[in-house]
Length: 420
Ligand SMILES: Cc1cc2nc3c(=O)[nH]c(=O)nc-3n(C[C@H](O)[C@H](O)[C@H](O)COP(=O)(O)O)c2cc1C
Image (cartoon, rainbow, N blue to C red):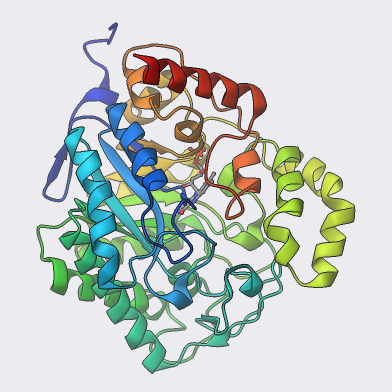
């Protein structure tokens, strides 16, 4: 191992009560390997066992639905009922046996769902603003709905603690329900949950407080949020307002923030890269469930959309570092940056320069579950090429690498491990 003595990527970091030995984490990627009712399968356990086997200090699960209404993809994992706890315990046991740590990401999708894809009958959001991408028009959540959802988040967090998770992450990024409440474009309310930033953060604050009441002050609770909404011509949030929201959450006791970007309606800034494989897979998968006009338009125009997307959202390392310095300046809790990290040099540079405290990666772990040990030991491994074929298959196939040559390399690596 040729690790520089002053390598900050491999120095410990504290998240709330939890000390972690290094600063490269596995971020959330929906596994879509659960059974049809959201229960853990062997495939889910194997997925996390491998990543933990690579020495990854912290794994964040894909988003877990906190109620049936919160579900956004087929074969998504759920934590909506007590009978899910035993299966989730298998996941945490597998990770702990490898000396890893694992947080559960808790989510409600709000309006970001194609109802026919998951059999949803009641879609809600902060306001009844139609999603321009999916065509889904939600109904406005009543105060009763909000109270029910707050309780469901808290129940879900309590189940996670019981299942042995080391912490939870509130998903408040990427245009899902908590993000819909934060953003003026999707939150047109004029009650105590809309209007000022203080009011628009109220839903997230109530969720956080309710979770704390159930899991206690010593259990890490972190939040994923946007560094920018990237909703041009619409009333999306800019970095400065999101930093203010993060400060409010820090004052309320959040233990760390992870910074992402964009809503569904923003296009693909969340997964910068190339988009031919992505859109081709989507057209044959999740987009089959879109309303007819949208489906037909995508069937005809997907290559044009892919071409435009390639130009608009080019892959580059650490693409959310555009936003994290503003959070670092004002927050004292750890700021984790996700997005585009592929090389040890780029990860190290981001942390050393003070732009973030830790980095996380998603697609690279789908290509190479042993990414952490390969980076740590300066060993080559299957390398993600940002083709986004995985994003294209989201919900239709298990989350995995679908680039032919990278996948072949991964399969060879895993076969070699199995033969040993
Ligand atoms: C297949 C797939 C599934 C994803 N699922 C989630 C999810 O469940 N929750 C979430 O917060 N982000 C999810 N993301 C976004 C990632 O967390 C991350 O922000 C994005 O992939 C950019 O990081 P990367 O360049 O390291 O992949 C997903 C991404 C992919 C590719």
